Length: 433
Image (cartoon, rainbow, N blue to C red; front, side, top):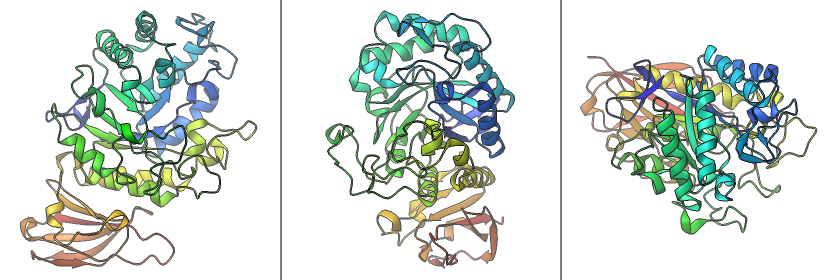
């Protein structure tokens, strides 16, 4: 069972610190057979992922791979009661239980957000549907709930509050969050909601220069737009009261079009995924959710894909970004990330912007700096005392020992040169005393 830490900034599982390492699997229940789902889940569990974000009803088709519908007559007040092994809801439960056996939490969206904003899941229908979900999954210790689904809370505030409140009433021991629209955070609408346990933001898929694209997702006047600087969402939400854990629940997916819509644009790459992870975590996030364009839609290559998808989900299982998330989790657990506080004051010359900006976190056992650009930087190590230093490679997960560092006002650090592409590194200083 997942709970909140005493300071309410992090998660606990069975009383022990839990680093949220999520994967985005929105169409898992509609696109995969049970056997395929087992392959996907095992792949993720072995890489250290421990949260799978998936939507219970995502598309208008409402059916799973065997053709069984989630709803009767497209009505959320009439969930399919069929209890056959391959029927919709029994298959979902089998997948959730299989995930539990692999140590995976399931962050479940009752539906994609547009069903709520369109009025299909609204009013008293919410109560019927949520009660059905609670009956099926309320006893699952590996379930987390996510209201929303790529939607602004202001699109249907009463119904989203109703969903959250009903989940809290019927599933009192399961945590609840809200997955928002791009470049937004749940804090914009639900900061004071008693049913909300943690803040999720979607830093999204646009570049710094893509503030307005004349597309359906242009909602600039309603967004907290900070470009690619996802750490700014963390800073904002960490400063709010009541205190809640904060994390990026949808950064730019690996190998998705920059800006989503224009096929002439480049794709987000593996190093961008790393940047979003380290930037948010060293700003104080409670975890991070990775995403792959092909996997979030489970594209098979035989149907029309979305957002310029390049590969099948089976091929995308092995993309390097998913493997490098293993290293993120290992580093954060090594430094006792849950005791950390943002430590920008230790970087006196950190005046760079955008990709030249460095992030620092100080924990009870280490001081960590992430440099995306790989340029030399200065750190004030006087308050750290005597330390030993390593370079941590976010690509390989390897550590390279530097030596002992004496306390000094302006210690100069020059990251190694990979000579083969993006040169991001993390500096790791461990206290000697």
